[in-house]
Length: 272
Image (tube, rainbow, N blue to C red; front, side):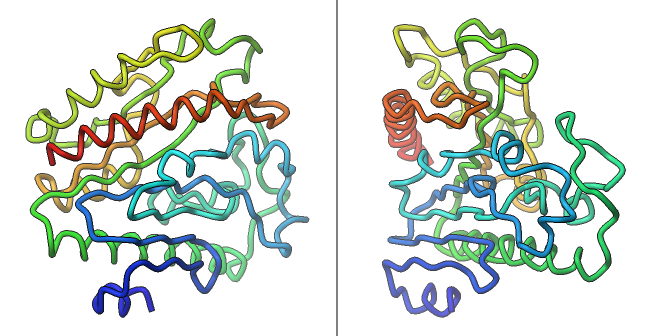
């Protein structure tokens, strides 16, 4: 249905995919799109008893509100399920965490999943990436180069609670390790400079490149397939806009960060 609507240019349209993995919004064909793959935290009911990590701990390690950064993008692809069920930011072989492992200090599964249980989750993984691939190929048929904003957030209070500006980690990290950095430097460098000039609560934001996160599966995949046509910008925002442990949202801070990001994107896409 998405493919048919794209071909017939039946814009705007929005949907939730058949298996429920993905929320999709498309209002016009432009050379950039926003992806928020870990905004959701749903786990299907049949796995709730198998999963060792509880809803509150899962939510803390998801990327809540990351979809707000792309809320005005003409093209939005948003993951609705928990990364603890299947992680969209890894190759499919690693998308379901091994039951013997811990993630962020937490046991994920009470037992090994059956093949049928795994396959049901991996079908949703495939569904999300099928939508993304479809849109990327659609845009590449229309534009010489496109930019994919891969939005994430990260916790900074796992070891010690404190104010965001007291934490030594950068406030925004851009992962570019797999990108054709030289080819896209005229786009990346001004974006980094623009983001670094912003402030929150009277403090200048600290912006870094590849300090926390070099980029994930989308960066590796599309940079390999289209090294000079698809620029994936994997952006990690420190959770300055919420209380990690309780989930309380600091609405004013989020609105400031989103507004600043949108301003930087508007200037950047003009260079694509």
